[in-house]
Length: 245
Image (tube, rainbow, N blue to C red):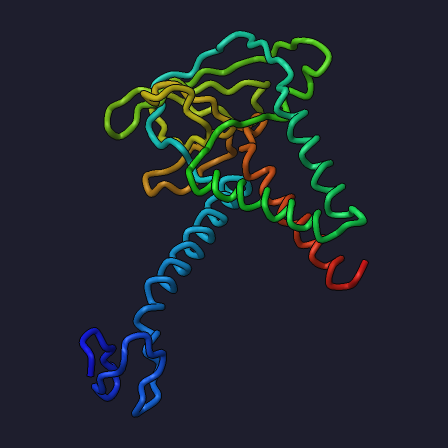
């Protein structure tokens, strides 16, 4: 037998190079070679599912971004809000997706929708948590508008002080100095010293919610806002292909 032959893992028989099955027990000799590809495919699938899971909770059920003790609560005056052009981009993207999902040439539309969905999933996998948009900016569509702002100082457990801003006439019960709070929001700087928040919840010593939270308009992550509609559009296009519509 020439050197370089494949050894069967099942019965130990040496087979010729390039053989796909053992000449004695007929066991597959490609199994070991296929494992790296299977592992890569499983890793891609696992990464995609994790990204989808992360994007889902980032959009529909985000965790608190900050936990700490309130050091101050003060009036932040009025803040001017301009209309965010990203809303136009999002609306146009949704309309394009809907058109592709209902286009006469369904297969081409389906491929384009899948390609866009994969690209958005990749961006989510790369942890692009910004940009964000807010419904508050719709109120400033035609002109600049000013909204009341509340500033809350929060000291994290590591001793870092964070200035939390809530823009847009917050409603609910504001926390008092010395109370422990969960804060939902987005850090505005790399050093994580300022945050724009949409919810502040007072918690007890066991971190369970206590009382009514203070709320304002939610900040919405753009990529998940585009990803999930495009997944729905892709599914609709696939159903049209299957049903021949």
